[in-house]
Length: 250
Length: 327
Image 1: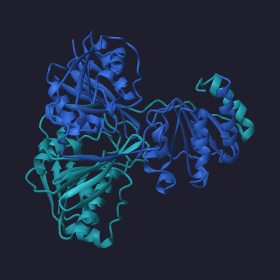
Image 2 (image 1 turned 45 degrees about the vertical axis):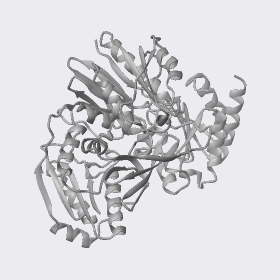
Image 3 (image 1 turned 30 degrees about the horizontal axis):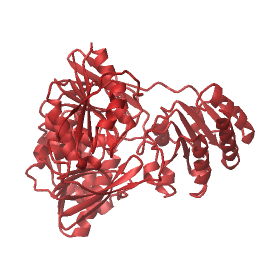
């Protein structure tokens, strides 16, 4: 099968963030970046489908400045065959604009399946995959926690609040991938060496009008310092009293 | 005067709490912008029953889009219908950032070629722009977005807006679906409900969560008993616990799982890794029970008890049950 996986480069989620001097971006000093976790699940799913189904091609795409080439190389070191960078000056915050750029590139690609992470750590917006599907008029399943592809059809499980939805859909299709579906493989040394020779094509991103801007960023207010009210079961009556009289939640 | 179109989410015929949150947010938005109307679109097998609640929370008009095909989530027909209606002079479309709402919003924005701002905790008009705040980077950085354009799609974080009454007419008009909800390309073969009567993590006023400190899947009985004692509580878990298969993935609270803001969060045997804190630090009151006094969870807990969870939790369960009986 011909599978496209769209990936994003995001900051290490364990980072302690500071706001940059302009007040509208994080301070990237000392922050490590890598392929977003959900994107890495999507890459793994794409690779596994092609491994299971025989000869195919897995293409990875990313929108962003040249730093995303490192992320694309990582996907190729995991096993993707080639990569496309849609170049921008900075990482755009307008998910619909990113979707337009990706849709323009994917349109004539003849892909059977286009995969995304369900959202990325930084914006947590979950826009791009579904919007690409809508622009290309493809069926789209969001937040799949299970996915099977067979005989030109797909079946998936989506997580709802307190329930799971089981769906079937025709190919070609777009699927956004949730956690728990597959553990992403570590690139092998052989994979890393091979990735250096795989094709990485760079083109300008056709974002169109960018209409959503990050105007300001701020750190959330700190919680007041915690307090330990006691030790062991002896502290339970005091806790219940506080929950009733101070927090008023009981 | 800006009008707002709200997607009033249902499951089957039942209105979800996020629908009332979205109508409340729509009412506040138009009132702050100098007045305007809130129209709520219900796509359900029968929409009329929901109208009273929507009107009470500030909907001037309820668009009842009734079709048997809406008994299950008809994402394509619902998005097409919302987009078709949205072209009749609205300033914004408000959609809950629920599992289904986050599936719909990009479809609606793409059909309208409109900008979309996701998962916001506040939204207002400011000059020609719509400004909205979104807790990004797993709640570690508040991003303030400005969206330009005559029509903007906004999705609202569940529990960020508290349903408030602001009675309006809530007159009901029927609105025909513009696509057949029975002809979706994504075919729903079934919905597997969680345990009956289970309160969703996103909607529960109280959450009792367990971590590795509970030592085994069986010991989650302690957490479940405490949740049952509160009566209105859901059970959550840390990523370590769901990765080990002690609890389903859907119960995971944290950066990569659910992000929750209950009135009360009780953390049992949870050390408080930054990954977990990202999912629950916006809870109003946090209680932590852990044997290690140095555990980071105590830095964010309003009330901490140091000690053995196997001794403390049953005592707390009994005390909570007792306290609720006396009310």
